[in-house]
Amino acid sequence: MSALLIKNMPPPLHERLRQRATVHHRSMNREVISILERELDLPAARELPPPVKGLKEVDHQFIVDIIRRARDSR
Image (cartoon, rainbow, N blue to C red):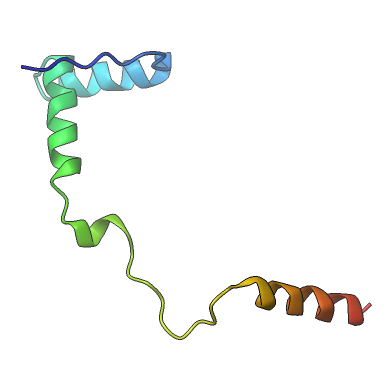
């Protein structure tokens, strides 16, 4: 089985993990595995929201036009 070392874990996060493991009657190691399994098993569709349709693509010319309009409105 593989091992994972987590370096520089902030003490408040470590304490929250310890408390959560205690509540679930698990070791900290088992709690981390449980969290990772749950989070990594999410469907891919939920990882990123769907793209918004109907919006203008932001390209170089679009930005140049916005800057010009802003300068002209001064």
